[in-house]
Image 1: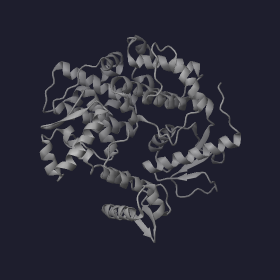
Image 2: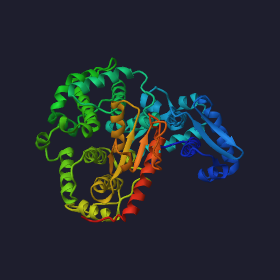
Image 3: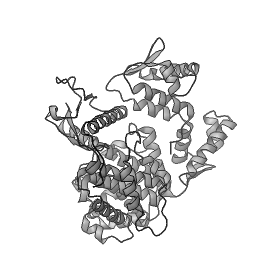
Image 4: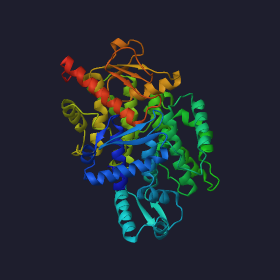
Length: 491
């Protein structure tokens, strides 16, 4: 499901993304066709976009040459800042932040503060109410606040803020971000793990969500899955003093029972994000075996073992990362609802599932189902995509040899390699033999070898650059398949 967005703002973001997708000029007619507007209206949109970009005039500009347009920007400028700034002007953003932070405004006061007419406000409010119902949520008007199961409110709010802020700003103004960052590094030191920077940012956002909900007196009830994983994990016991310190607030004193539930919740979030990166250091196989058979994590591990055996999957770092994503999807499916899985979707333009795998996986999925299971669900299509990625790297897809040439330090380069490996291709990072590489990725100014598969980007890749890299790797893969006359086989 697409995030709820004001049409005008959504149109501007799409237009800017289109302009940013290519360094050359776009004709006015091409842009008008892309956003499905008349030429006259498109000119107005481009004029407004040019004026809007003035606040970053030293970083990015929209250039017009006769009836052609293009964006020029510094390599160091992250255009996601512009998208995030636009999103925060939408009704959805303004209204939901009022609901979440419980600013004690009535609906009438809100519409008056933002100069909405009654009819416009009512229409927008009803659209938001309808949207939230997809996630089993709604809101009260007097005063404005979000209502629904606490676990669903927290997960929806996390994705809401992550989507609107793109991890570039900190939405929880009453919570010290630098302190949270330091405290997260304390947890890493206690467990002797090394998280990636994006993972730290995600956990920090989660802490912001949790502390805000506690301060507004919304406490999570006990959830069996969180309690079982905490009880089975030796690392939970190490983190208890740290967890107590994190959830402490100055405005709402928790009972011992409430504190335990909140600590187990925060550990589960840490587990969900960190476990795929650090392997068995959070919970080992022997502890998994001791979990109740009804435990979702134990079930996910059992399901994957069967999957690996039937599809002859060999263990690898990529496979381990996918195990975490599979458990996350299973949790969303069982504890939230399938609409939440839309936040986990692959980019279908960059990932397709071989038809042979679809048939084999459907048969595997339906085995042992006591009732007729539907395969026409968001959950089924997601895990089909997810697990086919593992299979393709083992049986279906050619290996792509990628050479990384970077001026960055070893730590930054390691993080970059980890992110590249998460892309849905059968990749091997080769740092030396350029002549054997299918693609060279570089943040250096120039590479002497005349290689058409060189991909240049700046040392801090933007979202648009990740998309361009994915498109280039997709083309490299297609060329390699064509050259090898590669055929999918059933193994």
